[in-house]
Image 1: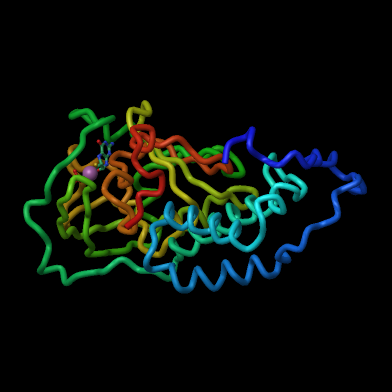
Image 2: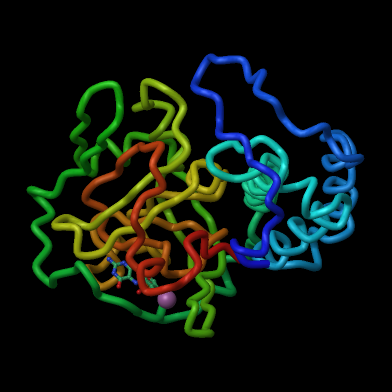
Length: 283
Ligand SMILES: Nc1nc2c(c(=O)[nH]1)N[C@H]1C(S)=C(S)[C@@H](COP(=O)(O)O)O[C@H]1N2
Ligand SMILES: [Mo]
């Protein structure tokens, strides 16, 4: 339905912050209660979670909410952030759902080390240069309580983790790789942001390549800051001296040669999302 076709019923403007809304709202037409919408959504989630893509679900969710009441009812609801609240609820609900999809409980499969693909495939050199100055390389953390500048030894001092997992490229190939490194969550615990944050941004020195991560994926128990691949220190093509290994995401998010890590509440820019790939790029 287009803007012009919408019912003429006046749509109340949002009340200013802190002001109780007493304005003459049309007598509510019979419609579902917030609880009924929530219940209907929850029921459809359980049935649909494994069947639908996130995008498909947003459409289905809006359609389900719309189906419960009349269009008129929906559009006569007070607005929050410029849209009638049932839509806002569905969007918030979908945001919570993507949180559930990236639940820390969902582990990516791991493999016996004998299954490692040798040699590891090399793909994507954006933001990399052959002559990496390992002596002068530093990892900067922005958005922590104070500015943090770390050496590779600082990363090596964190508990050492090993993981044999799949690296999946969006171009359609997979290899099995063995990573050695520190858990991002251990780094974050040692150098925390002053307040909880929703996102982490990572970029190469000079920001030739950059990725944005939701905080749940960054803190996932398989997300590593890796300094070795298949038992050898990283070569420059694989992102020396330190790269991201995030097996719950496609290869594009596995940023090679991290220069800066930033905690943020604003969804960070992402190199391939800007080229119209899905921002989450989970699988
Ligand atoms: N800095 C940087 N990191 C990057 C890329 C890139 O172009 N530049 N490409 C990504 C892509 S698309 C893939 S599939 C993986 C490949 O990692 P590999 O070369 O170690 O196999 O790196 C990712 N990280
Ligand atoms: Mo990739």
